[in-house]
Length: 145
Image 1 (spheres, one colour):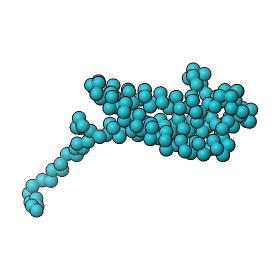
Image 2 (image 1 turned 90 degrees about the horizontal axis):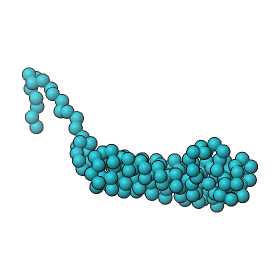
Image 3 (image 1 turned 135 degrees about the horizontal axis):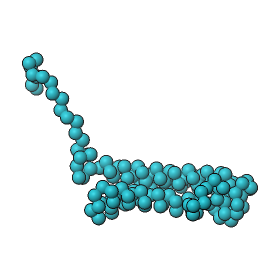
Image 4 (image 1 turned 120 degrees about the vertical axis):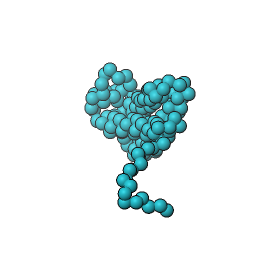
């Protein structure tokens, strides 16, 4: 092992991360999976909020279903993020197309999950705070469910 002499100035090596600068980087894949999982968590949280607010399906069986669906929706969101990044990258659209495809697919799946599972239409809710469609009144009208 060689030691630098006192006369040589110390020059730190520049920090480089091959995972960021490579074309075969794993960082965009990890970010896509994380974004997909976060969108899944957001959809799950919206569903829990709607069920609890409208008191529709928030009994013991409904809570079990929601707890069972949490890991499923997280893994599904991560898988959707990875798949959409891979498809976008295959189309050779630079960085924008894969990132846009991840955003569109994962947000679309989160919206679909909330629209199908979060608003239990015609479920007999007891809270009296929601209409028959069990869509909380705070939900914006311009986003269809």
